[in-house]
Amino acid sequence: MNWEDKKVILTGGSSGIGKQMVNDLKQKGAKIVFCGQEEDLVSSVSTSIGVKGITADLCKEEELVSFFEQAIDYLGGVDILINNAGFVVAHPFELLQRADFEKMFAINTIAPARLAQLAIPYFKENDCGDIVNIGATGGSYAFEKGTAYSASKAALNIISKNLTLEFRKDNIRTFHIDPSWCTDTNNNVNGTPIPKDENKLNPPDISEMVIHLLEMNRRAFVPEMSIWGMQ
Image 1 (cartoon, rainbow, N blue to C red):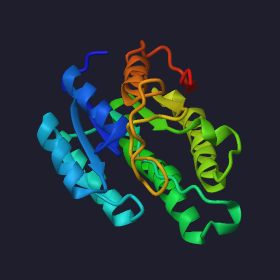
Image 2 (image 1 turned 135 degrees about the vertical axis):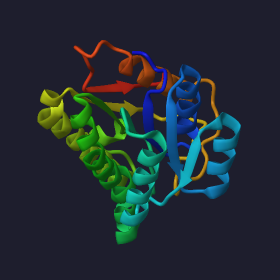
Image 3 (image 1 turned 30 degrees about the horizontal axis):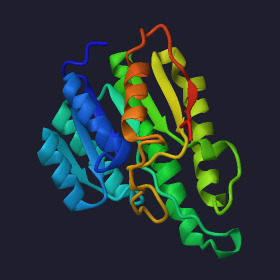
């Protein structure tokens, strides 16, 4: 793949895996617009890496659409959509609130689906496009206090499968990537930080694999894969 001026829209780019991908893609020569929810973090990443950052709450349809439209205006189109933003609330089942389910499904499931809907017409017009959905290994099994999070990521996995089913014929590739526990991110309980641990997965591990998959010859793609840490 020739990354020069490749147009990338990425969610959750203000920390962790998303921030790493923004940096690595910028180094490759891609043009990037990312979003994040915390204005100070978005501004810091935007300034330090030299890319366009937009503050947006993906739970709100109007902000999601505005983010996408601003990105399209800035980039002049889109070649790659990376749905990386994620949110987790880890509570025992009996203590989960309706709002917990709604926020996790809004960010982890509905936002990627809506952004894919918005991007697909541009991909079809170009006869080419790539969607990367960052899921979680927890989307394929149950774990303690993980009911709502696992359900939201499992739903994203089904969306990825259906995107492949419906749009593979249009030369639109969908990559569903499930990392296991990744440190040095902000996707802990209620979006709090997960401290860096060199013995566990770190953002560069995920970013490197995503870029490698995107660089595959367009005659091939990996529809689904998991990335596990050794510990």
